Length: 111
Image (cartoon, rainbow, N blue to C red; front, side, top):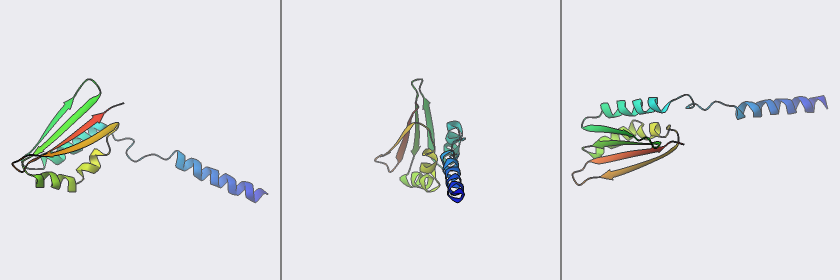
């Protein structure tokens, strides 16, 4: 019977540890994430970043590139992975213009 209690206590201990596990992005602040996005855009020629922080709890970030290939390169470098770290409801849209350029818009609604 003691073996059963010992086994159950080990199982409960392991279950508790996983329940209180620390998410790897929990300590990353949105400001740090936007800095990472900004550095990706800064390393890309002919790309511009526009950041609009409204008082209504919505942040809209627009990345405009002259070519779709430039935007594709940023995505290959982890742009979407970085965007996925943002808190709140986050949506991404991509629009292509008639000159071959692309605009990626990130909308973040904070709760």
